[in-house]
Length: 133
View 1 (cartoon, rainbow, N blue to C red):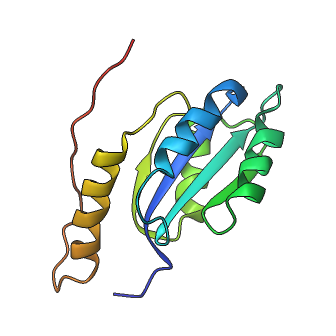
View 2 (cartoon, rainbow, N blue to C red):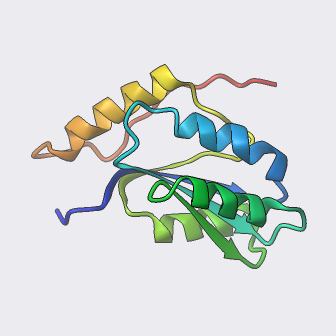
């Protein structure tokens, strides 16, 4: 297996999601150790300040957050762009209006780090979630 730069890439497809990005990205970066974690915010041709805010998050979190802009291709197109740019061994799509709590992300990262060095790592890990409406 070729070495990858990161253990986990979070892909955030974002269309007009400026007001949600802060909570989402900060929750992902709340992990105790983010050295092998990356967050890709894929601005899908937003009409609001999503791209500018994503670039601000990239500047304030160098090496952890990347802002990617594309003309509008829809949710699936933004997800595909994120996957194509991911450097993580594992990829997780998180919508911009979602968030993750720190104990959960630390547990997940611990599990993925073990898999990263395993002789026969798993292809997929399924986690639980809470639908918060």
